[in-house]
Image 1: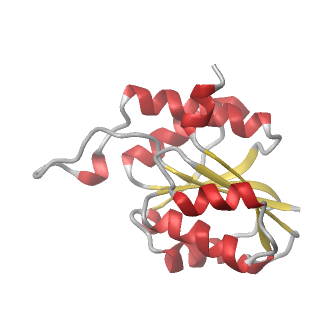
Image 2: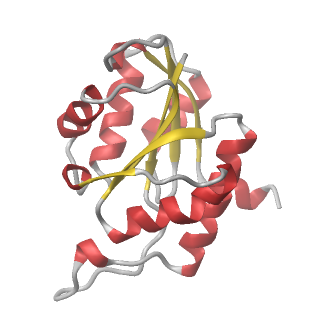
Image 3: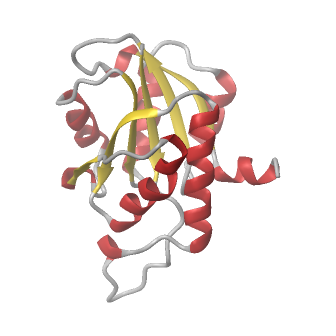
Length: 173
């Protein structure tokens, strides 16, 4: 079985006119949320064997803070994922072959729209996870999909299994 985790980067410093959007860093709370989400991914038993991450600083930092939970590893850094539309995300995934879990870290609105697209076209989603996914996809949020192993990515083969937000983890403390 292949597993796909679509994650929005964690909370960043505010954008303001004249600032470099691509170079925005995580806020301390975003770094903490990324680490907590990394642990939540491990607690679910979905340790990523591979990562596909936008070149934006905030996406790379999200990986860097989450990855120690599963022992790290270097992700594939993909320039096309910066502010990618759903079709671009689908194309990027269709070029890959993976087994186990793949973590993709990107940006809204594209990563959210892509997650909703997969949830709609795949097998019946877990209802609570779907309701939460369709409602919103805040910073640090992750959608978990599972599908049959195949040589090529076919979105219709992936079923939404869960959606976790950093806020959910803060409530448990």
